[in-house]
Image (cartoon, rainbow, N blue to C red; front, side, top):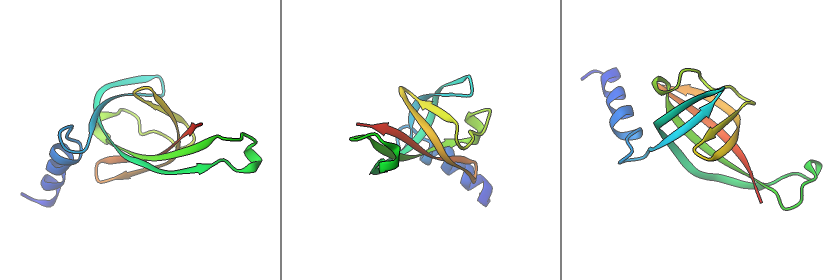
Length: 111
């Protein structure tokens, strides 16, 4: 097995496997619905209080990372757009494409 074959095997059978790391989700982006695709979400990376200039007391920003296979979504999401994963809507802060995966840093507001 060469490197590319090993990488594809790991992406499909380990990282994006619902029995391992990923969970099947419905993703809504850019007017499209992608049902039952594996999404790996790292836990809340950080809660940070909104700055005083944002004027909302008691509101926090939750930041997470989400990993999706490039092959599972037609359009690579873009920074400063929104994406919904299951019932939670997020602002896309950064987008990277790494070895067949889309890596998104996402933020959501929480009280």
